[in-house]
Length: 136
View 1 (cartoon, rainbow, N blue to C red):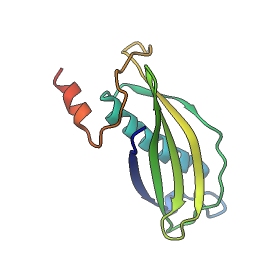
View 2: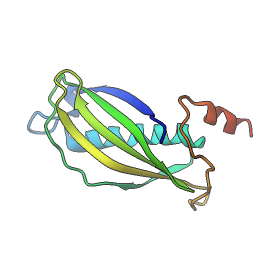
View 3: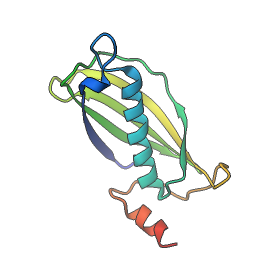
View 4: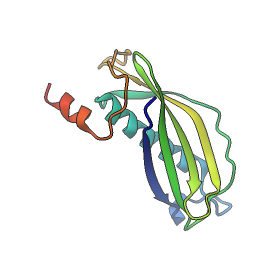
């Protein structure tokens, strides 16, 4: 697979904390899923994608208020109707790994929610595919 990387940064704010003063795991997973969906949408050229699978979730370290996190996405594979991504979350200042997901699978779907062939096999760096599909 051609090397493709998308990096998103998130700042841990007071409203993101759990009862122990650390980043709530559910908030981090929300960020991971939402940003991964944006990558999938841009790569497949359609906003009609759904999360199909996430690999095992194992938090390596905690993140605290004020931490700046980097969520780095890479493309693992294209399927006929799917795209598989990987995500590594780390503290941007210390480099400490917070979370790694080896596989996040999105499926392109039609208006009824059935999988559809997307025809993509290689990454593109921008949003050209979305712009192309809006002209159809």
